[in-house]
Image 1 (cartoon, rainbow, N blue to C red):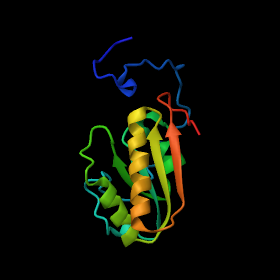
Image 2: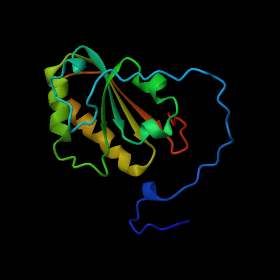
Image 3: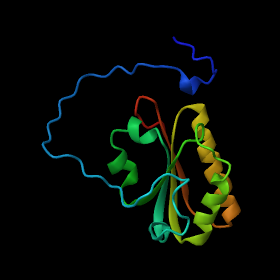
Image 4: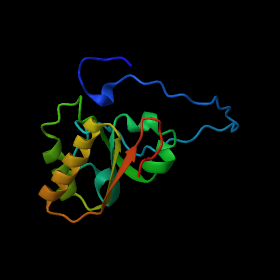
Length: 151
């Protein structure tokens, strides 16, 4: 095992062994992305795509780990992505609370990786929901570094 010196188990280098797969479909899977921008720092809280919507707040790595990200999590949802470890997150709780307050939000899904640093995103969303004063259904989805759903 390699030691990167930071002590974070989520940063440990890992090799994920997979059997080689052969694509049988000739069609590419369509993108389910419905808006731009997607980075939480850049999305306007009053953007029309947040109103009357289901919102997916996803850690950056989830889309790379979960091969079926678009069909399983993104389809039909407005998206905001963030990294609780590498982003400057000081404004995230207030920005999310503003998004929840300013829009009619049907549901919130938080998608995070199983690594400890990703829990911060889940905690920020829960804190923002509490600050918003709204009662919006919230689900947290945890994805393993191997791309498998953990819950």
